[in-house]
Length: 249
Image 1: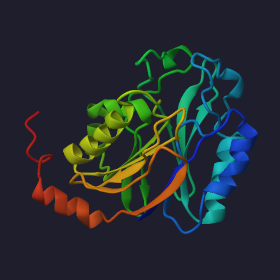
Image 2: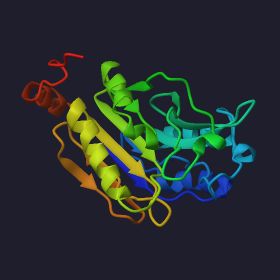
Image 3: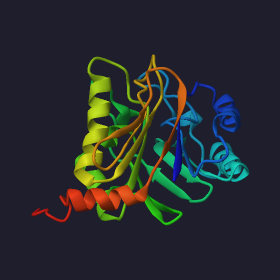
Image 4: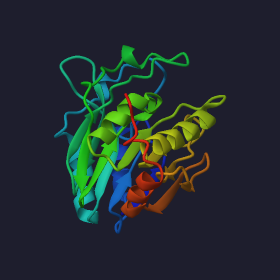
């Protein structure tokens, strides 16, 4: 499975971000992962996001679908989903698979209060099938909750993708990279973390294999990364380290 990690920054202009989908999504990949909040960036902390939220059949998700099909791939990208109240922070999957995942754990941490402007999604794991591979989704702050990653693995996930806008700050890159590796090692899965770049976010998108080896890692600036995921490595890792089979709890 060829995976492309698009570590690019979204702007406060939804129309421009929508237009850029055609620029940043390449052909020739099985899976293309864009960051959280690609439809529109968050803006100032506490900003009202309701005016920018869209329905799942609105312009952004429709364009993700169009570009994915045009390029013969599957695209994962973040948006703000319109509701009757405050929006969801949603990741859409379009192309060779179709899924809408609403972020469960909102970023009420490090001085931020995401729950003031966005609603949490239902507490249920989100996975999709792509060419016989089960892929699970976490969004940004979800990464800090190992029980959700374990729920994804219990649902069959062999690959976990993590679109993010991991806010920049002291120790934040270290937290991000450590947690990506931890989720991969403890669950013997591939983890694909894709963040927005500096200066607002932390960058350092990466792919980690089921034994914790970093296959590719970006820096803090905008860039596009590519990695090959070999599912035989998952089976080999689970033979070498059968920690999932050895659980007592």
